[in-house]
Length: 336
Image (tube, rainbow, N blue to C red; front, top):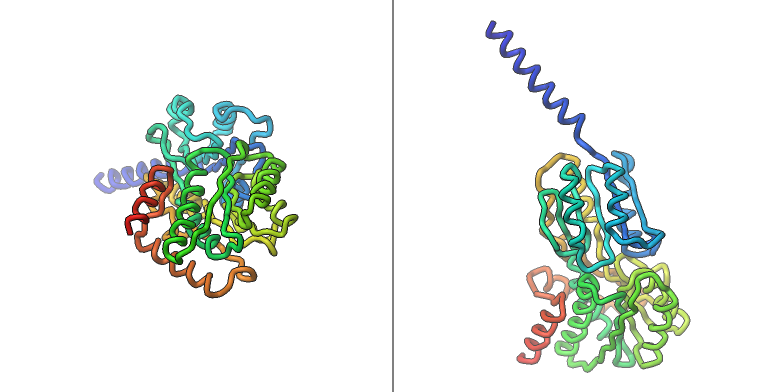
């Protein structure tokens, strides 16, 4: 009788485990508020990060060609019944998603490149410390400029762009102090992430105003800045992914915002059914942030300075990521 009870208990455990495995939803989904994933930058990088998981499980993507509000896109996306849903938003915050997230507790929602606007057991946010890579690019721009003036073009005034902007400006300021330079900066906002013609027009204006290096963090709009650099034979800095092949004779470097590192971490733990999907290290230390140099254009001694500065940041050097922290950073430089 005792053996029968033990056997029955074992069968019940196996049945329970089998049920858990059967019910576990391994379907992955990526949603973007942008019209397309084909931007040669941020959204394309996200798509690449997920697409190879199609060999292990089902992967679904959804773009927004009709430019609908994100809530509308998400309302459609949840009908696909994913288990893990990554979100790329064009907005600064998305509190309107809170009721939808609460309505679908069986879905794990991951908002990319944002700080949280609400909390939920099945909702998390993650962002790359892109300001750290931008700082290195700003430092390099200050070292490489011949005109003594460099520029930055942002898509909008969103927090995600602020990290690039103020990291870059801080890098220029730090080079000015460390190398006894007096490089000036100019900044413009395009007001769009999708209009390449606007990016080209703004870049041409900056080059005409004396900038000889431009860093554009503006999605597809930034591609116009790259085109202008080629036409004007000036330097440009890529963003999100290594964009060197778009302008091999004009692109000094690319500032990486590599969500592949983060997405791989989250998906791996999700497929193992781990409870916590929190990612703590998202800067240079983890490899999620960084800068890729074009060694055909960047001299060895300048590249060496960037490598040394990279290690300084990895060891705890604080890089500003907002207007307030940038102003504090500048005030600190002025006291030294």
